[in-house]
Image (cartoon, rainbow, N blue to C red):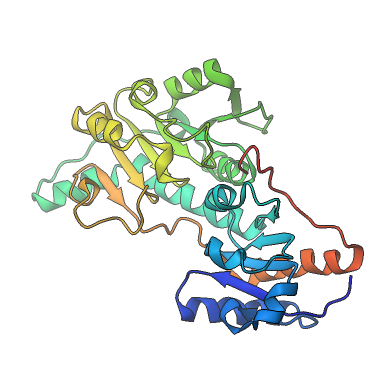
Length: 316
């Protein structure tokens, strides 16, 4: 298929972010013309078949009646699936090796943060307590990964290189070198029961929403710790608070929340056993993401085949 119409970039982000994406996308595909949705005329909107998006307003997508394909520049697509599920549009999400490497780096960094008891030593400094606890070898610490997709595999490799024992759970069993793998409800129970540090990297779907409820958090070993780099709604917020207050869980590193930005009155901000991060574990790199989008668009122009990689029924 030949290029002709401009490709709209549809996003609810601020103007600076939108223009940053437009610039990066145009640099990656000089044979195309990417423009902010607001710059499209009504006649152009009526003919568009492809849109590149980042948290788009569904109402704006509906203003393009010929739209067939939506390419997200984000890896997470649960909101898009919810918004577009009945539209018949095909959806491509970002699959970027750079994103996997960035996530693996974050998982390793914050696992080490918990493994070396940094939250505890920060509190002791606050109270001027000079006291050292016994060091635990990484070989004696089990890190469990919820979600063994592209991100989970990269995270597992980084953790194994740091000498941690690694186990993992996924919807269907996956074999990952060096990782003890589980699947299914019984497998989830087994995996949770052996995880000293639990890392959540699951997509948010109807099946994973509220997955880490009170019952499942109670399956973790006493004084286990949690890292959530997936989506806030996967963890039952009140159950997590109770598990921390009761000292069943030692600490939680939370990068994602049901409501973002995290409201100023949320309990997480002041809880002594919670580390709050502003959704920074694996930010999308505009240049590498734009190159991947460009490749998909080029193949679409050449063959007419849409590289849809999201199963709208499964939600990812």
